[in-house]
Length: 183
Image 1 (spheres, helix red, strand yellow):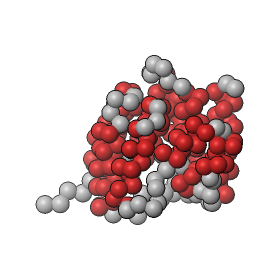
Image 2 (cartoon, helix red, strand yellow):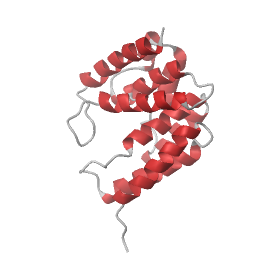
Image 3 (cartoon, rainbow, N blue to C red):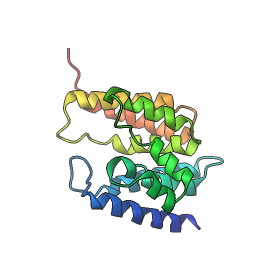
């Protein structure tokens, strides 16, 4: 199946799943599929700057990366509609809700690092697209923690995809303007 067909099939699946729970972008009324499309766009562009990059695998995982975490979709459903490797990648990109909040990102990054570099790239692309103007309802502490988490992602997944690593570093530098410095 060509990339366009895989993209369209996966986008439709993800759109149905996120729409079924009325998910929108945080702080807006935009459908959540906008975020997923932005992550997939980062992956498409990165694939053009990367050697030995399985764009078909990466596009599908990019579009599905939040389905287990944010919808009622199960691992088994993704496995049945796509394949086991895609389901495992989506699961690695899903925060484990059974562990302490402060350990969720480290746990996810540890699981991501056990998989191929395209999965690492998706986590980088996800954070790149999320480092926009923070939602109005976020307080200074949440913004600061999000910034620190972005640095953790950047450092932990270093060596995975130079193009996306550089994009993330740039977005982190831009994000500094949202930090409230207390004296």
